Amino acid sequence: MAGCGFWREVLTVQTSTQTVDAFGQAQLAWLNVGTVRGMVTSSQSEVMDDRGSAIRTNLDIETAWSPIINTRSRLVLNGTAYNVLSLVDPDSGRKKRLRVTAAEVTP
Image (cartoon, rainbow, N blue to C red; front, top):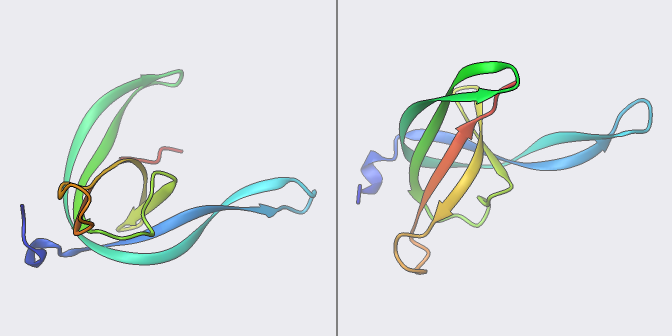
């Protein structure tokens, strides 16, 4: 368990919302809902999709518990967006910390 002094990175939390484009069609947009501080460690893995192989960056983040982060959220760190894959409360429901796993959004 790292103390809050290690939470040096500032992450922007975004949630999805739908807007209407010029043709009247629903368009997915992301709305900033807040910021959190966290300790970030990254790992890279090779993934295969229909466009071939690519390197994907995953983040493991430890942060203070926050109700604005959920599995439908997206985190932005240094201009790069990451989709939240999982959330774990390591303190057995005491709502003190969160361990977040997030995957880099690829275009």
